[in-house]
Amino acid sequence: MASVLVCFFRKDEGYEISLMSTYVSLQVKRGQKESIRVGENGESSKFQYREIIANHFDYRGALDFHNSKRHDYGTKHGLSIEET
Image 1 (cartoon, rainbow, N blue to C red):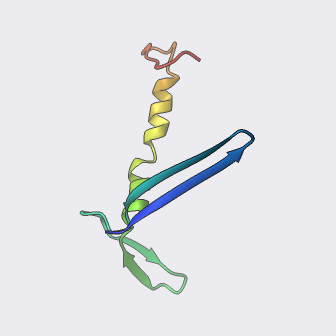
Image 2 (image 1 turned 30 degrees about the vertical axis):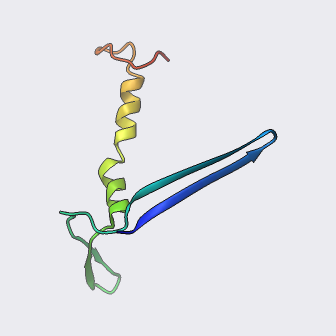
């Protein structure tokens, strides 16, 4: 199983920071539906997104959902993680 390793480095005056993170495999997710693309010449091709891309499309709204709940202070629901 292949995985992606991401490294971030920053060097400032007085300190250095190094963050390393791994990500999921580059395999096709189990149960991933096939996508179809039609080219300019009319030919179609079927493919499946790799797990790293499929997760982006599956979970891209999670951060927006969280932020909407975080800033929901003073609305009819009265829920808020923090005051703004």
